Amino acid sequence: MDAKSDKPERKIESDEHERGAPDRAPDSGEQPDQSADADEKGAGESRLGIVRRHPIATGAVAVVLLAAIAGGVVWWLDARQYEWTDDAFIDARTVTVGAEISGRITDVAVTDNQPVEAGAVLLRIDDSDYQASLKQAEAGVAVAQAGIANVQAQTEAQNAKIDAAQKQVAQAQAALEFAKAEDQRNRELLAKGTATQQQADQAASTLRQDQAALDTASANVEAAKSQLTVLAAQTKSARAQLQQAQATDDQAKTTLTRTTLVAPVAGHATSISAAKGTYAQPGQVLMMFVPKDVWVSANFKETQLDLMRPGQPVDITIDAYPEKTFHGHIDSVQAGSGTAFSLLPAENATGNFVKVVQRVPVKIVFDPPPDVYLGPGMSVVPSVKVR
Image (cartoon, rainbow, N blue to C red; front, side):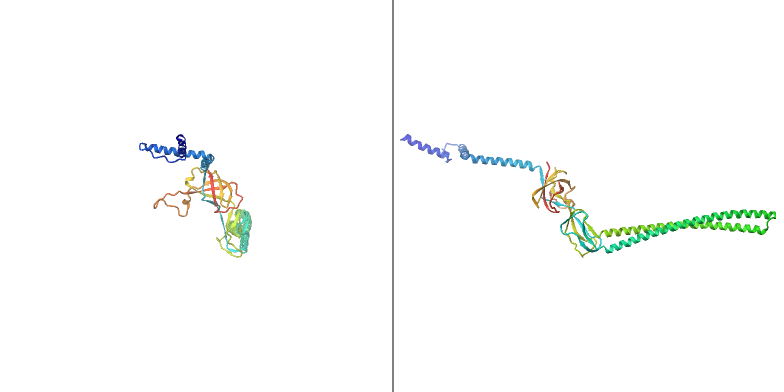
Protein backbone atom coordinates (compact mmCIF):
# COMPACT_ATOMS: atom_id res chain seq x y z
CA MET A 1 0.00 0.00 0.00
CA ASP A 2 2.72 2.50 0.82
CA ALA A 3 4.54 1.90 -2.43
CA LYS A 4 1.36 2.41 -4.46
CA SER A 5 0.37 5.57 -2.61
CA ASP A 6 3.65 7.29 -3.53
CA LYS A 7 3.07 7.20 -7.30
CA PRO A 8 0.08 9.60 -7.54
CA GLU A 9 1.86 12.21 -5.46
CA ARG A 10 4.92 12.19 -7.79
CA LYS A 11 2.64 12.56 -10.84
CA ILE A 12 0.90 15.55 -9.32
CA GLU A 13 4.23 17.24 -8.64
CA SER A 14 5.39 16.61 -12.23
CA ASP A 15 2.20 18.11 -13.67
CA GLU A 16 2.49 21.17 -11.52
CA HIS A 17 6.08 21.65 -12.63
CA GLU A 18 5.16 21.40 -16.35
CA ARG A 19 2.27 23.87 -15.90
CA GLY A 20 4.67 26.40 -14.49
CA ALA A 21 3.37 26.24 -10.93
CA PRO A 22 5.23 28.55 -8.59
CA ASP A 23 8.10 27.02 -6.76
CA ARG A 24 7.88 26.44 -3.10
CA ALA A 25 9.40 28.92 -0.79
CA PRO A 26 13.11 28.43 -0.65
CA ASP A 27 14.69 27.17 2.45
CA SER A 28 16.31 29.65 4.67
CA GLY A 29 19.72 28.49 3.46
CA GLU A 30 18.98 28.95 -0.40
CA GLN A 31 20.55 31.96 -2.24
CA PRO A 32 18.38 34.63 -4.09
CA ASP A 33 20.38 34.31 -7.36
CA GLN A 34 19.54 30.72 -7.65
CA SER A 35 15.82 31.59 -7.35
CA ALA A 36 16.08 34.13 -10.24
CA ASP A 37 17.86 31.60 -12.43
CA ALA A 38 15.12 29.16 -11.71
CA ASP A 39 12.47 31.75 -12.77
CA GLU A 40 14.22 32.47 -16.08
CA LYS A 41 14.62 28.82 -16.76
CA GLY A 42 10.94 28.28 -16.11
CA ALA A 43 9.94 31.13 -18.50
CA GLY A 44 12.16 29.75 -21.25
CA GLU A 45 10.72 26.29 -20.82
CA SER A 46 7.22 27.87 -20.98
CA ARG A 47 7.99 29.57 -24.34
CA LEU A 48 9.41 26.39 -25.70
CA GLY A 49 6.26 24.68 -24.58
CA ILE A 50 4.13 27.16 -26.57
CA VAL A 51 6.30 26.65 -29.68
CA ARG A 52 5.95 22.87 -29.32
CA ARG A 53 2.18 23.12 -28.91
CA HIS A 54 1.68 25.57 -31.91
CA PRO A 55 4.42 24.88 -34.45
CA ILE A 56 2.41 26.02 -37.53
CA ALA A 57 1.36 29.37 -36.08
CA THR A 58 4.85 29.99 -34.83
CA GLY A 59 6.31 29.26 -38.27
CA ALA A 60 3.76 31.57 -39.95
CA VAL A 61 4.64 34.40 -37.60
CA ALA A 62 8.34 33.87 -38.29
CA VAL A 63 7.73 33.90 -42.06
CA VAL A 64 5.70 37.11 -41.79
CA LEU A 65 8.41 38.78 -39.74
CA LEU A 66 11.12 37.73 -42.19
CA ALA A 67 9.01 38.90 -45.13
CA ALA A 68 8.39 42.25 -43.43
CA ILE A 69 12.08 42.70 -42.78
CA ALA A 70 12.98 41.73 -46.33
CA GLY A 71 10.29 44.02 -47.74
CA GLY A 72 11.52 46.90 -45.61
CA VAL A 73 15.07 46.38 -46.83
CA VAL A 74 13.94 46.20 -50.47
CA TRP A 75 11.77 49.30 -50.03
CA TRP A 76 14.64 51.23 -48.47
CA LEU A 77 17.05 50.19 -51.22
CA ASP A 78 14.54 51.26 -53.86
CA ALA A 79 13.31 54.44 -52.13
CA ARG A 80 16.81 55.81 -51.66
CA GLN A 81 17.14 55.93 -55.46
CA TYR A 82 14.33 58.52 -55.79
CA GLU A 83 13.62 62.06 -54.70
CA TRP A 84 10.01 63.22 -54.81
CA THR A 85 7.86 66.17 -53.75
CA ASP A 86 4.20 67.07 -53.71
CA ASP A 87 5.03 70.78 -54.05
CA ALA A 88 4.77 70.65 -57.84
CA PHE A 89 2.32 71.80 -60.49
CA ILE A 90 1.77 72.07 -64.24
CA ASP A 91 3.29 75.23 -65.64
CA ALA A 92 3.10 77.05 -69.01
CA ARG A 93 3.81 80.45 -70.51
CA THR A 94 0.29 81.78 -70.76
CA VAL A 95 -0.32 84.55 -73.30
CA THR A 96 -2.41 87.63 -72.60
CA VAL A 97 -4.44 88.51 -75.69
CA GLY A 98 -5.21 92.24 -75.60
CA ALA A 99 -6.24 95.02 -77.96
CA GLU A 100 -3.47 97.14 -79.49
CA ILE A 101 -5.90 99.60 -81.09
CA SER A 102 -9.27 101.06 -80.21
CA GLY A 103 -12.45 100.02 -81.94
CA ARG A 104 -15.67 98.13 -81.65
CA ILE A 105 -15.44 94.33 -81.63
CA THR A 106 -17.30 92.93 -84.62
CA ASP A 107 -16.67 89.19 -84.15
CA VAL A 108 -15.44 86.76 -81.48
CA ALA A 109 -14.41 83.64 -83.37
CA VAL A 110 -13.71 81.33 -80.37
CA THR A 111 -15.50 80.15 -77.27
CA ASP A 112 -14.23 79.37 -73.78
CA ASN A 113 -11.59 76.62 -73.61
CA GLN A 114 -11.73 76.00 -77.36
CA PRO A 115 -8.60 74.40 -78.83
CA VAL A 116 -7.17 76.43 -81.72
CA GLU A 117 -4.20 76.11 -84.02
CA ALA A 118 -1.47 78.69 -84.56
CA GLY A 119 -2.67 81.56 -86.75
CA ALA A 120 -6.38 80.91 -86.16
CA VAL A 121 -8.55 84.03 -85.85
CA LEU A 122 -9.57 84.82 -82.28
CA LEU A 123 -11.54 88.06 -82.74
CA ARG A 124 -11.96 91.03 -85.09
CA ILE A 125 -12.22 94.78 -84.51
CA ASP A 126 -14.02 97.18 -86.85
CA ASP A 127 -11.48 98.21 -89.50
CA SER A 128 -13.41 100.84 -91.51
CA ASP A 129 -11.47 103.79 -90.07
CA TYR A 130 -8.16 102.00 -90.54
CA GLN A 131 -9.01 101.11 -94.14
CA ALA A 132 -9.57 104.83 -94.82
CA SER A 133 -6.27 105.71 -93.16
CA LEU A 134 -4.51 103.16 -95.35
CA LYS A 135 -6.01 104.61 -98.53
CA GLN A 136 -4.95 108.08 -97.45
CA ALA A 137 -1.41 106.85 -96.81
CA GLU A 138 -1.30 105.14 -100.19
CA ALA A 139 -2.41 108.40 -101.82
CA GLY A 140 0.40 110.22 -100.02
CA VAL A 141 2.89 107.73 -101.44
CA ALA A 142 1.53 108.31 -104.94
CA VAL A 143 1.83 112.10 -104.52
CA ALA A 144 5.41 111.79 -103.32
CA GLN A 145 6.31 109.54 -106.23
CA ALA A 146 4.76 112.04 -108.65
CA GLY A 147 6.79 114.82 -107.05
CA ILE A 148 9.99 112.88 -107.62
CA ALA A 149 9.03 112.25 -111.25
CA ASN A 150 8.31 115.95 -111.75
CA VAL A 151 11.68 116.98 -110.36
CA GLN A 152 13.42 114.41 -112.53
CA ALA A 153 11.63 115.78 -115.60
CA GLN A 154 12.68 119.31 -114.70
CA THR A 155 16.25 118.11 -114.28
CA GLU A 156 16.23 116.54 -117.73
CA ALA A 157 14.77 119.74 -119.22
CA GLN A 158 17.41 121.81 -117.48
CA ASN A 159 20.15 119.59 -118.84
CA ALA A 160 18.73 120.23 -122.30
CA LYS A 161 18.83 124.00 -121.65
CA ILE A 162 22.43 123.70 -120.59
CA ASP A 163 23.28 121.89 -123.82
CA ALA A 164 21.54 124.62 -125.84
CA ALA A 165 23.34 127.36 -123.91
CA GLN A 166 26.67 125.66 -124.46
CA LYS A 167 25.96 125.54 -128.20
CA GLN A 168 25.13 129.23 -128.15
CA VAL A 169 28.48 129.82 -126.46
CA ALA A 170 30.21 127.92 -129.23
CA GLN A 171 28.32 129.93 -131.87
CA ALA A 172 29.14 133.21 -130.15
CA GLN A 173 32.76 132.16 -129.90
CA ALA A 174 32.93 131.50 -133.63
CA ALA A 175 31.27 134.83 -134.41
CA LEU A 176 33.70 136.56 -132.10
CA GLU A 177 36.68 135.00 -133.82
CA PHE A 178 35.38 136.16 -137.21
CA ALA A 179 34.71 139.65 -135.86
CA LYS A 180 38.25 139.86 -134.51
CA ALA A 181 39.70 138.86 -137.84
CA GLU A 182 37.43 141.30 -139.70
CA ASP A 183 38.36 144.14 -137.34
CA GLN A 184 42.06 143.41 -137.77
CA ARG A 185 41.74 143.37 -141.55
CA ASN A 186 39.80 146.65 -141.65
CA ARG A 187 42.40 148.29 -139.44
CA GLU A 188 45.17 147.22 -141.80
CA LEU A 189 43.22 148.38 -144.86
CA LEU A 190 42.46 151.71 -143.18
CA ALA A 191 46.15 152.17 -142.50
CA LYS A 192 46.92 151.57 -146.22
CA GLY A 193 44.13 153.88 -147.28
CA THR A 194 42.13 151.20 -149.09
CA ALA A 195 39.30 151.12 -146.54
CA THR A 196 37.16 153.83 -145.16
CA GLN A 197 36.88 154.86 -141.53
CA GLN A 198 33.25 153.77 -141.53
CA GLN A 199 34.17 150.22 -142.48
CA ALA A 200 36.76 150.10 -139.70
CA ASP A 201 34.25 151.41 -137.15
CA GLN A 202 31.65 148.92 -138.34
CA ALA A 203 34.08 146.03 -137.87
CA ALA A 204 35.01 147.23 -134.38
CA SER A 205 31.31 147.50 -133.42
CA THR A 206 30.63 144.02 -134.68
CA LEU A 207 33.55 142.75 -132.61
CA ARG A 208 32.17 144.33 -129.46
CA GLN A 209 28.68 142.92 -130.16
CA ASP A 210 30.01 139.40 -130.69
CA GLN A 211 32.05 139.68 -127.48
CA ALA A 212 28.91 140.68 -125.57
CA ALA A 213 26.98 137.80 -127.14
CA LEU A 214 29.69 135.37 -126.04
CA ASP A 215 29.60 136.73 -122.48
CA THR A 216 25.82 136.45 -122.42
CA ALA A 217 25.91 132.87 -123.67
CA SER A 218 28.52 131.92 -121.08
CA ALA A 219 26.41 133.50 -118.34
CA ASN A 220 23.38 131.56 -119.53
CA VAL A 221 25.37 128.32 -119.25
CA GLU A 222 26.39 129.13 -115.66
CA ALA A 223 22.81 130.06 -114.75
CA ALA A 224 21.48 126.84 -116.21
CA LYS A 225 24.08 124.80 -114.30
CA SER A 226 23.22 126.56 -111.03
CA GLN A 227 19.57 125.60 -111.57
CA LEU A 228 20.69 121.96 -111.45
CA THR A 229 21.75 122.48 -107.82
CA VAL A 230 18.26 123.72 -107.00
CA LEU A 231 16.70 120.74 -108.73
CA ALA A 232 19.03 118.36 -106.85
CA ALA A 233 17.83 119.83 -103.55
CA GLN A 234 14.23 119.47 -104.70
CA THR A 235 14.96 115.82 -105.57
CA LYS A 236 16.25 115.13 -102.06
CA SER A 237 13.18 116.82 -100.58
CA ALA A 238 10.86 114.79 -102.80
CA ARG A 239 12.59 111.54 -101.85
CA ALA A 240 12.33 112.41 -98.15
CA GLN A 241 8.62 113.09 -98.63
CA LEU A 242 8.31 109.71 -100.34
CA GLN A 243 10.02 107.94 -97.43
CA GLN A 244 7.71 109.71 -94.99
CA ALA A 245 4.69 108.72 -97.05
CA GLN A 246 5.90 105.11 -97.23
CA ALA A 247 6.41 105.05 -93.44
CA THR A 248 2.88 106.34 -92.98
CA ASP A 249 1.65 103.69 -95.39
CA ASP A 250 3.51 100.91 -93.52
CA GLN A 251 2.12 102.13 -90.21
CA ALA A 252 -1.39 102.17 -91.64
CA LYS A 253 -0.97 98.62 -92.92
CA THR A 254 0.36 97.45 -89.54
CA THR A 255 -2.51 99.12 -87.72
CA LEU A 256 -4.98 97.48 -90.09
CA THR A 257 -3.53 94.03 -89.36
CA ARG A 258 -4.09 94.65 -85.64
CA THR A 259 -7.83 94.70 -86.20
CA THR A 260 -7.64 90.90 -86.46
CA LEU A 261 -6.23 89.04 -83.45
CA VAL A 262 -4.85 85.56 -84.14
CA ALA A 263 -3.49 82.74 -81.99
CA PRO A 264 0.30 83.06 -81.59
CA VAL A 265 0.74 79.28 -81.10
CA ALA A 266 -1.43 76.20 -80.83
CA GLY A 267 -3.33 76.00 -77.56
CA HIS A 268 -6.61 76.83 -75.82
CA ALA A 269 -8.48 80.12 -75.56
CA THR A 270 -9.73 80.68 -72.05
CA SER A 271 -11.02 83.39 -69.70
CA ILE A 272 -12.66 85.24 -72.60
CA SER A 273 -13.97 88.66 -71.58
CA ALA A 274 -14.51 90.08 -75.08
CA ALA A 275 -18.00 90.22 -76.53
CA LYS A 276 -19.35 91.28 -79.89
CA GLY A 277 -20.35 94.94 -79.87
CA THR A 278 -18.15 96.04 -76.97
CA TYR A 279 -15.60 98.80 -77.47
CA ALA A 280 -11.98 97.75 -77.02
CA GLN A 281 -9.30 100.09 -75.76
CA PRO A 282 -5.54 99.77 -76.35
CA GLY A 283 -4.02 97.54 -73.68
CA GLN A 284 -7.35 96.03 -72.63
CA VAL A 285 -7.13 92.27 -71.88
CA LEU A 286 -9.72 90.44 -73.99
CA MET A 287 -8.82 86.80 -73.26
CA MET A 288 -6.10 84.46 -72.04
CA PHE A 289 -4.37 81.90 -74.23
CA VAL A 290 -2.78 78.71 -72.89
CA PRO A 291 -0.25 77.03 -75.24
CA LYS A 292 -0.08 73.26 -75.63
CA ASP A 293 3.54 73.29 -74.52
CA VAL A 294 3.38 72.61 -70.76
CA TRP A 295 5.85 71.27 -68.23
CA VAL A 296 6.17 70.58 -64.51
CA SER A 297 7.60 73.07 -62.05
CA ALA A 298 8.65 71.09 -58.98
CA ASN A 299 9.86 72.88 -55.84
CA PHE A 300 12.34 70.46 -54.28
CA LYS A 301 14.04 71.08 -50.98
CA GLU A 302 17.62 72.20 -51.33
CA THR A 303 18.67 69.10 -49.40
CA GLN A 304 17.27 66.94 -52.23
CA LEU A 305 19.42 68.46 -54.98
CA ASP A 306 22.73 66.78 -54.18
CA LEU A 307 22.38 64.02 -56.78
CA MET A 308 19.85 65.73 -59.06
CA ARG A 309 21.07 66.45 -62.60
CA PRO A 310 19.48 67.52 -65.92
CA GLY A 311 18.45 64.54 -68.04
CA GLN A 312 17.53 62.21 -65.15
CA PRO A 313 14.28 60.27 -65.71
CA VAL A 314 11.16 61.28 -63.80
CA ASP A 315 7.90 59.44 -63.08
CA ILE A 316 5.04 61.93 -62.89
CA THR A 317 1.72 61.33 -61.16
CA ILE A 318 -1.02 63.87 -61.81
CA ASP A 319 -3.83 64.23 -59.28
CA ALA A 320 -6.39 64.62 -62.07
CA TYR A 321 -5.36 61.24 -63.55
CA PRO A 322 -4.46 59.04 -60.58
CA GLU A 323 -4.50 55.81 -62.58
CA LYS A 324 -1.85 56.99 -65.06
CA THR A 325 1.86 57.53 -64.69
CA PHE A 326 3.60 59.88 -67.08
CA HIS A 327 7.29 59.94 -67.90
CA GLY A 328 9.68 62.81 -68.39
CA HIS A 329 13.12 64.08 -67.53
CA ILE A 330 14.72 67.01 -65.74
CA ASP A 331 15.27 69.92 -68.09
CA SER A 332 16.99 72.36 -65.76
CA VAL A 333 17.41 73.48 -62.16
CA GLN A 334 16.80 77.13 -61.35
CA ALA A 335 19.91 79.09 -60.38
CA GLY A 336 18.56 80.21 -57.03
CA SER A 337 15.81 79.45 -54.55
CA GLY A 338 12.24 80.52 -55.09
CA THR A 339 12.34 83.13 -52.37
CA ALA A 340 15.35 84.85 -53.98
CA PHE A 341 13.17 85.89 -56.94
CA SER A 342 10.00 86.67 -55.00
CA LEU A 343 8.49 90.12 -54.74
CA LEU A 344 9.79 90.51 -51.19
CA PRO A 345 12.92 88.36 -50.86
CA ALA A 346 14.12 87.36 -47.41
CA GLU A 347 16.65 89.66 -45.74
CA ASN A 348 18.64 87.37 -43.46
CA ALA A 349 20.99 90.18 -42.51
CA THR A 350 18.27 91.93 -40.51
CA GLY A 351 16.44 90.78 -37.39
CA ASN A 352 16.68 87.36 -35.83
CA PHE A 353 17.79 84.58 -38.15
CA VAL A 354 15.95 81.27 -38.23
CA LYS A 355 17.31 78.75 -40.69
CA VAL A 356 14.61 77.39 -42.99
CA VAL A 357 15.17 74.77 -45.65
CA GLN A 358 14.67 76.57 -48.96
CA ARG A 359 12.96 75.17 -52.03
CA VAL A 360 14.44 75.40 -55.52
CA PRO A 361 12.25 75.18 -58.65
CA VAL A 362 13.16 72.34 -61.03
CA LYS A 363 11.78 72.27 -64.58
CA ILE A 364 10.61 68.83 -65.73
CA VAL A 365 9.45 68.22 -69.31
CA PHE A 366 7.22 65.39 -70.47
CA ASP A 367 8.65 62.57 -72.51
CA PRO A 368 6.64 62.27 -74.82
CA PRO A 369 3.95 65.01 -74.58
CA PRO A 370 0.91 63.70 -72.66
CA ASP A 371 -2.26 62.77 -74.54
CA VAL A 372 -4.56 64.25 -71.88
CA TYR A 373 -5.66 67.79 -71.09
CA LEU A 374 -3.27 69.60 -68.78
CA GLY A 375 -3.56 73.16 -67.61
CA PRO A 376 -1.37 75.47 -65.52
CA GLY A 377 -1.73 74.99 -61.78
CA MET A 378 -2.76 71.33 -61.78
CA SER A 379 -1.14 69.38 -58.94
CA VAL A 380 1.43 66.67 -59.70
CA VAL A 381 3.87 64.48 -57.76
CA PRO A 382 7.19 63.89 -59.58
CA SER A 383 9.65 61.18 -58.55
CA VAL A 384 13.19 61.67 -59.84
CA LYS A 385 15.53 58.68 -60.14
CA VAL A 386 18.82 60.05 -58.84
CA ARG A 387 20.74 56.80 -58.49
